[in-house]
Length: 223
Ligand SMILES: O=C(O)c1ccccc1N[C@@H]1O[C@H](COP(=O)(O)O)[C@@H](O)[C@H]1O
Image (cartoon, rainbow, N blue to C red; front, side, top):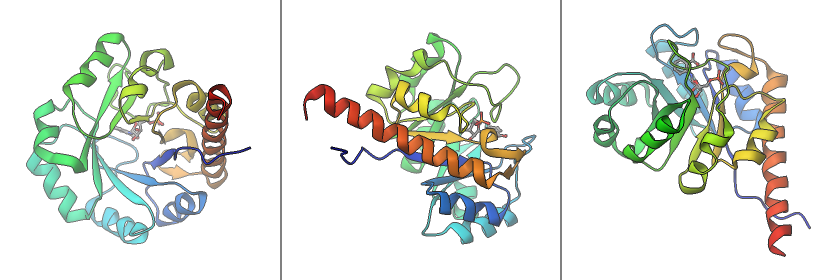
């Protein structure tokens, strides 16, 4: 018997077009990400962000991706744009996260056990893990070594990011069992331009894997 799986939260990140908000909503995403990081090919300005937030309002949660702003700057962006949450994707200290409260979560770049150990310094209800790539902040298309984060996913709500795409997301969900998955470059035809088919297949594959993992766990427990 197929049982209802625990929900897998899916974030499609780095949207730059209102049409891609529709694509993400139609595919069944739970969250979209708008990028405000200088130098990112997915960066948008506040005016466009407000337009995308209006298109998304009440249909999908909107997360702003920022790096190395202070807490007052982040708070101003949350308010100006009308974001639901903010993802701190730079080298922010734990105090910045603490000052922002529950609407903020930390993105940790992970390439070693030492990086994973830093998770203990960052509170909040959610933690994103992305691959550590020297000289880059994110959106790299590089995967996190699942063996580094599988234990973390047992004790934290983990949003797994880094190099996910329609072909590998199912295996990542089965292997790590994260709270959610996040993708930017893996569902694009060009930076910031989402590919409708890739977004749809990504969401379907991720949800199928979450269902299969839940069924397997039920089978193992005799439920
Ligand atoms: O997408 C970007 O350009 C970006 C730039 C700076 C910081 C974060 C960025 N995106 C985040 O990177 C991860 C993984 O992206 P990918 O799937 O490997 O392309 C994702 O969390 C985005 O939110």
